[in-house]
Length: 344
Image (tube, rainbow, N blue to C red; front, side, top):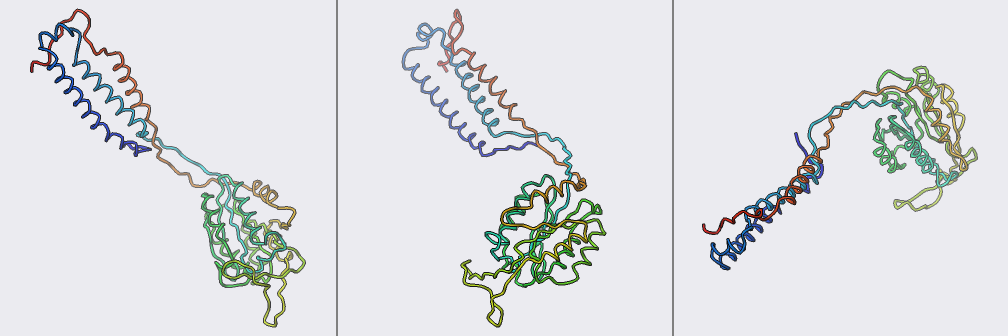
């Protein structure tokens, strides 16, 4: 099967009939002009070496050469070869807290934006690993399933905001359970969960689920966002403009602070590690170093049918025709008698 990488160039072939028509018109005009100039017997004497036949052939060679050049420009591809692509890496599920408390700006520009920046940096360093993104507050939601399409993962990361999940809270328990069930395959040594949260207002028996996940061989790394000193939670209108600070029903300003204890316990129970993200230092390189130490697994091999480039075939043919055209004289060799083609 033949296909063209740039089929749009084939439209240039539509100019070939126009070119042929132009040549036919020119040769007819030349033939008519010669007939008017003199009789055939006289023309044979004054132009003994003229050969319109060779001029015809030169034109045919030139047009054919250009046709092959157009085919070459369109990059024909045919024939296939099979390649086995093997991927070796880990499965990484990133769990990102999108509760309202993550909008606190004790880390610039705020906890959530900083977390998204760090996730983006992690994705940039992955090589063959599968990455998935889950967001959670009161309930968890898989924003991006496990994939090696890092561009798609980063695009889904960009649009994350607290508004994507209307149910408020910090339901880490359900998020861990969903991530655990979303992994595929039995090789748990190459699976890791990266939990990024402020750990506040958590629900459920987190230590139990973390221990169960750790016993299965899946590690959980946790990253604490924010400071341990209480800060207010800003509120925004529909246009993203800050309108004030979040208050309780009594009118008191709600204060949020990082709960390191719960995040440390999750990491400890699953044989992972806890990291505290600060304004002056990011922990990405440390997390990535830990990921690099983990056992890599072979993902399912995939066979790709790849078309082989053959643009050089019509290119070579066109060049040969062009050389022949340039070497072919448009006159008869000296000593031959011109035979009139105009008596017809």
